[in-house]
Length: 118
Image (cartoon, rainbow, N blue to C red; front, side, top):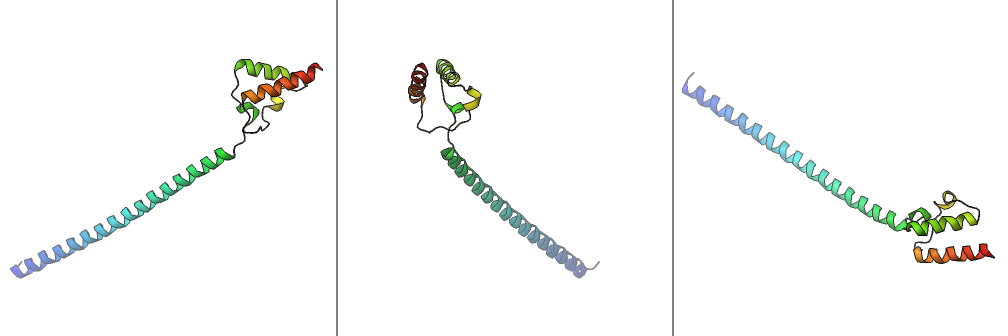
């Protein structure tokens, strides 16, 4: 091989190498951009999911079984329910006003109990 041929060969190899490097760099950037877009989509979906969870919690109407009752309150509650001919299973899934708390429940149970005594 002559010097000119070697130089031409070397120059051609350099160009091919440069072209490969540029192609790889472009592919790398393209894939990196795709990943960034996917990350953004994931973040948006996470935020939407969080908003939906918050809305769901706001819309959730507590049920009788969601009440935080002590064992004594629960026992009294069940006794009162039995007195009106129901079981706890009959009413545990009934929705109750969210403002209802154990103090209001006690008043309600006392009223039921008083009615049953009369």
